[in-house]
Length: 109
Image (cartoon, rainbow, N blue to C red; front, top):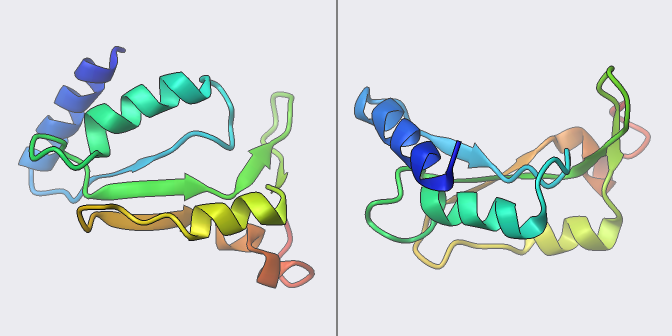
């Protein structure tokens, strides 16, 4: 699906009254950074036509293999993500809290 097709899909979902957030996909690493950015720009940037109310940033790095496993991103990378803010007031969310440095040793992953 192209970035424009993705935006159109999200517009249809939003039209039903559902609040839409998009996940950045950086933790699963299926797309390059440039590809992810094109999808995020089409769906969640500050243009009035962007349907998403914000971005969910992935705080993990997924393991390889068929079964999902993950570990936290490096603390410095998480700190950089936690500092991100939308220039137009869109929501900034994080997935998942278990990967935050303050949760190390408390919540398993």
